[in-house]
Image (cartoon, rainbow, N blue to C red; front, side, top):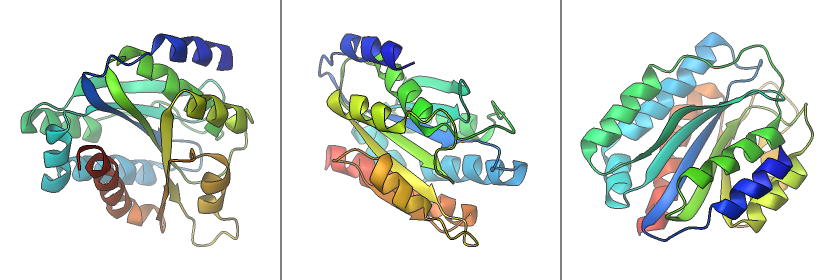
Length: 216
């Protein structure tokens, strides 16, 4: 996986005609049940439908893609890259997000493999000047154990990793601390969702921060 990532990153030399490529990597590991999966998809779709978010995406002509990820070898590009050139483009991708079936179920949390897979997708948008992985997760890595190397390679390639840490209010382990220490790049940030019910608010604020930084 990491060797393939290195090859893909070498090929992904930006031609600088696209402002940014934003890849949304959504955790669908075994700790995410059917209702929580629906909350994530509906929350992401609602954020994309938000007028402020949609306006920023179109203004920056942002390229969007969506990955679902879980355990070792369980990553899928469920929505391929698409440029947000109009409000209709944003509305269409939001509708597609709402209708997305779940790619995997009852699996582990291989955060490093998710990052490596996400980073390889940027080879398909080589003209984008800025590349951002927006990863969400509700727990630390418990499979694969490649997150350190994956982050290092991704950061060296100039790709930013931002994160939404979905905290379980009944847990003593901080997901936000894990993502801050081990996942995001030096130029990245962590947004905390206080449970999956808070995810829609967090993803909207996160998208606004990401795309406003690009075009503003």
